[in-house]
Picture (cartoon, rainbow, N blue to C red):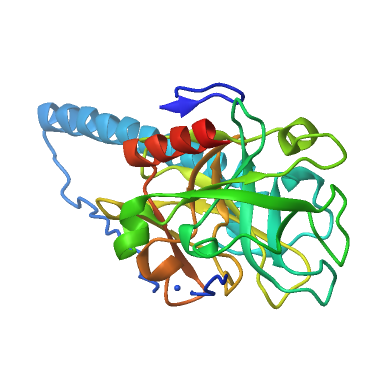
Length: 293
């Protein structure tokens, strides 16, 4: 399910971080027997032809899958490897959350992204990023190198699931936050908004963009996700350290299907991150946020 942009279908943050696993090995068997009789030879050739056709099909499928991911990342070898962005136009809807003054020396501690809504003023992030007061919190989309190319937006009301508030349920570590107007304009009118994707395939290829707290520019990475638990997704992308909680998992260029958070508030090492699975509970939370805006 996808909520289209502009439609209703409907302090203290932590700096957690991420477990890596090996890739499965594949083996090949090579038949060695030769047949001298014509009948057996023909049957053997037909079998080899069928095997060859099957192998060709598998190669095409494999190449197509790799090419799809590589098209997002720039090259197949770049999958799972992050790199910094010092020009942020392509990811302008993603921004750093600052506590206090916005500058190259400022305190940005989490990441968020604009999500489309009828109210045109919502961002999505991790619940643990905004579990306290939003006073003195600011969203700076496209922030890089001390610059705020799309303005500094004051945060308003945060909507969190009561079950996360009561017990920090890792499957509900998601929040929607209103952003106050700036110079008479709403944030979605300036930047547009990602679609909210619910019940998405758990093996999609996504782009992950976020703001490490010890850096002055976002990093971005492309890789295929996988299920971790029934309510959690996992992705291997390097260097997502403290400050990247709330980073959006974007698929198809315009649909967000997760944010770094959930398991251990995003993970215990920098190179593997987690997200709560965006299902009906997240959709209901989104509707509550829209209604409250």
